[in-house]
Image (cartoon, rainbow, N blue to C red; front, side, top):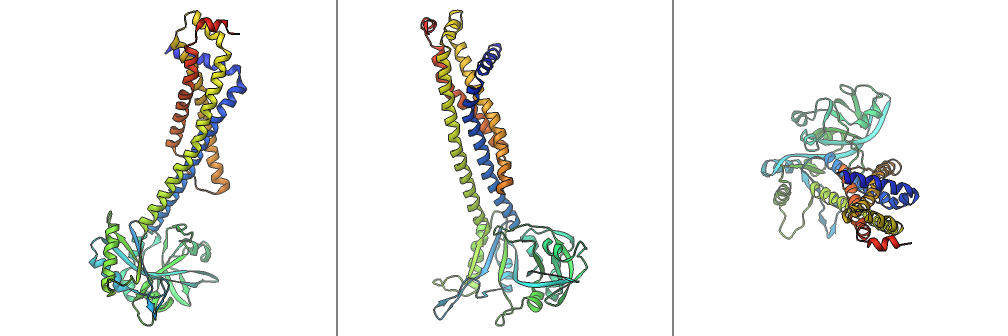
Amino acid sequence: MNKVIQSMKIAFRALRVNKLRSALTMLGIIIGVGAVIAMVAVGSGATARIQQQIASIGSNVIIVLSGSINTGGIRMGTGNAQTLTEDDGKAIANECPAVQATAPSSRGGAQVVYGNNNWGTQILGTTPDYLTIRDIGIQSGQSFTGSDVDAATKVAMVGKTVIDNLFNGADPVGQVIRIKGVPFTVVATLVSKGQSPTGQDQDDLIIIPISTAKRKVIGSSKSNAQAVQQIMVQGRDGMTKLAEEQVRGLLRQRHKLQPTQDDDFNVRNMEEVFAAQESSAQVMSILLASIASVSLIVGGIGIMNIMLVSVTERTKEIGLRQAVGAKTKDILAQFLVEAVTLSVLGGVIGIALGITASLLISYFAEWSTLVSPGAIVLAFLFSALVGVFFGYYPARKAAFMDPIEALRYE
């Protein structure tokens, strides 16, 4: 231990003699470590953002959308034909073992009035299970019930954006708002959900019973009063893929589709969509970190070059040390400690630079960044290993010098 401490003292003294050269030598390591930490922070931030978006959608969510139909050889676009019904939603809940809950829903825009204020927002007609499937919490008040859906009660739950634009700080619960001139009593306020994965404000929303929405606000299909735009489905834990298959099979059976016919609905498994996005973000994070790691290799080559120069400059010193009894391993340790000291000091400064760069990227570019302690530790250890790897050859060259030749060196 004493020999290691002594070697470190000699190493620091040697580095202080040539401060500018030492600083320039460390620059590659500093930039490399800083770049690795910053790039990993960007990648981790993107992954965390996707995970937040997954959480905002809800857990194990499958969205069934109305599809298209063929009319005289003309294929209508997705959603143009209302091919789903409330009964489809009930059948999915009752006949698909892998499904935990369903919530048929229809959506439309409307102008909402409270007192002297008005606001254009989205009106969602659905059932109470929608809150469970989408993991939407109640801030105050209480949700409407299945009885309200059956009775087409004129009650509403409002999102934060609607509250901010209509109520001017007043408590919305118990207040009466008008949606397309129809009075609704606010029974609950919703916990904020923020933006959706597509950038839509999920808080700019009023939720009402689906029966009320069809009769009073959004309207219903003249040909089918049971028609809905979509059905939200929640699969049981670990059974989302099976639930998707069961839902597709049941709907094809209910809609009397032949094996050669295309689905007249669309099933979207949000778990698969986000898993693909998360995988892409992780690959990008690894790619960015790999590119940044090249700077560490370049920094290591710089350390090796400078250490070779140092060995050449101190040839006579090495010869004197050998002449007075210094062993090969002592000289090897001395130069190896110098190389590691350069890389470790560069790594520490690089960590500070990387964290600062991550904060600046987050502030100026408005990208989500997440500095990972694991990335910091990994970058630091890698910088130390670079010092050992690229410092070994110069240290070995110094350690195995011929003492007589070293003393004669001019």
